[in-house]
Amino acid sequence: MSTGIEGLDYIMDGGLPTGHVYLIRGEPGTGKTTMALQYMNAGARNGEPALYVTLSQTARELDIIASSYGMSLDGMDVHSGHDLFGEASAQSVIDTSEMELERLVGRVRDILAETKPTRVVIDSLIDLRLRALDVLAYRRLFRELMDILIAAQTTTLFLDSDPEYGGDSQVTALVHGVLSLRRALPGYGIAQRRLEINKLRGVAHAEGLHDFTILANGVRVFPRLTSELDAAPPSLDTVGTGLAGLDELTCGGVSQGTALMIYGQAGTGKSTLAASIIRASIDRGDQAAAFMFEEHPKTFLKRADRLGIPLTEENESGRFITADMRAGEVLPGEFVHMVLDAADRKPVKTVVIDSVNGYVTAAANKDHALAQLNTLVATLRSRQVVTVLVVEQPGFLTQIGHSLDVSILSDCIILLRQYEPQSMVRRSITVLKKRTGPHSTELRELVMEDGRMDVVAIPPDRLETMRQLHLLNSHAPI
Image (cartoon, rainbow, N blue to C red; front, side):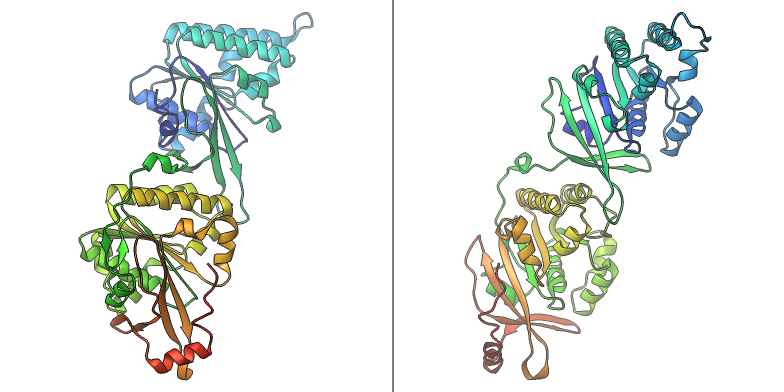
């Protein structure tokens, strides 16, 4: 049975096995009610009868919540706590709470017999716990409700809070599946929401934490990327970089389906070199995409156009996609799926991430972000995509090395440096590594002028200046 939540069915291997009882738990604000409404609306679209028991708010309040996400309660049988519990008179012989719970069970049994729903939501269990005489009475009530719902052949979602917010951890052993929602606030940016399927009986579900976000139309889940799902070998066909001099250094260009790292100081031309690789991809008839974590896409396009690398027209036509990735506004899992959507739907054959520094800075958990980036690069390899990783030099590469070996991220590394001969700043370029074939170790000059970008040989007098500046023997450790 589909949950109606994009991405969630995928990690459940298709959806929820029917006829069972499931638990969604999490702290307030994690999206439990929103997910339940999406689940119910998915059933309503299929014409399935549905029962929504709302104990945490009135039916009117639930309708307002649904409307805020563009959803409706039409086609659902909605009952509030007031409808089910009724009015209990105060007396001293029988505890009022016991009468209330017995009335609730009886009303639910009658409603199930009348409407025969296939989908049921009970929101939320904490309200039942507050009305129960003690913990044992509550658990007996829960077990009785489960038996009634299973006997009626419904697929039911119970909503509950985490134990630290009053939830009961014992009921997780009774249900057929448990979905836990987590919410954390980073030092800057939007709330980081993640979910975990703690158990799902009889289903080989995707384990681990999966990012999710709450959008204008409800919850969307971004399944954790696993490289074994995309184990096809890369193509390794050689493609040009758009610069004849760089093609000579790389002995023909870069290999399709590999990761190219452009590494250097600020101002050495890393992003502009990436623009040349994008232009070459478009000239071959492919599409390209750039995800910009530092520079605004319009600035990137304007500079490329001025250097004789026209990209604005390609961007307007849709052959070149740009995305402005603002720090703190995108989850790591969301970014991963944005890239894969571009690679799958367009399809894009060249992806630029500019820069890895900005990507890691935007992530709340640096180690997790780098691990996801590693898996993303591996997945793009299997899709025969050239991945261009722009990395800024000052001390950052060493930091990456502490958490993730750079050689895992990149198949080819191009190093850009600055030197100052005759009171002028010039740029050098060399290829440090190419896994898929031979490359030149020659040091050349990267020239960037209005209307021109080129890789040329360095005159002997400048090479001597570079030797004196120790640039030939002082490459940063990688």
